Image (tube, rainbow, N blue to C red; front, side, top):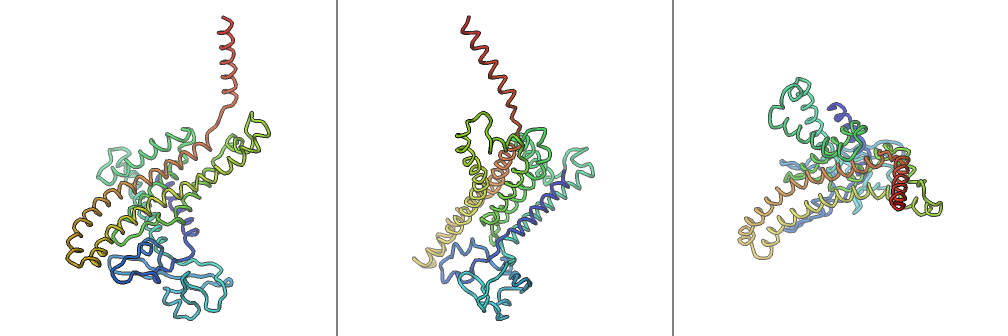
Length: 356
């Protein structure tokens, strides 16, 4: 099971890499000036990776006329003379278009880190279980106990709860992988210099697309029948219900993507805004007031950080829960004959009661 989870994490990593943001926001052009804070610049995707020791500039990779152009950083790309900087980002100096932008971005790095940590965590737990620790004996150590709690929670409270038990087993690796990957990406956003990859709509949309594909592949004949050919429904009504059902199929992944994106982005913006009040008070009333009030703002931010840890896990849970619900609805078999017989029995009993 752990190997299946690891394999699923690698597949998700590949899909996120391919469908990651293919263009970088012009963050350098909107860097903060003076004491003000550029909130959108702090939450946007960048061509550099922030660390506690400074910035690490990321490669720019372009496909132009079938050829791949590689530059170690944006500065190197500009120095080559082939590109110029605009508000939309880098464009070719000769005015020609770029076929494909495969540049590495900060959010993509955090996606990779989140999946890597989830993968290492799972592989470490798998090695423990292979040795008999946790399988033949009780789990040992806080980390393994945390892993087992999370795994059993996803399996028992999410997968078994919303997916038919006879089919649930094959979805446990996927849903647990999704939960762990999102939780890790959310937690990395709590680092002072970190970024929440899930605060990027492209990342959440990719995750929602993966769930959408799994859901449709899992759909039974009965599921598709209820989308395109409702049993027992007049033909005229089918022409109305079918477009509504197709729209419903598309709105489910859309809701998944927007919910995760909006919650993680709003939390990041809230923390930046509260810390930014230190600089605003300093600009308005002087350094003494700014430093004096910073105790309150930092304390409030600390409380919010505790709340953010809860929200990070909660959003991973909600995304996984809704994914399981959608998969379960598609994979469920409806026994129309049984319902038909039940209705006949109910009608027969009602007639007998009326005769008596």
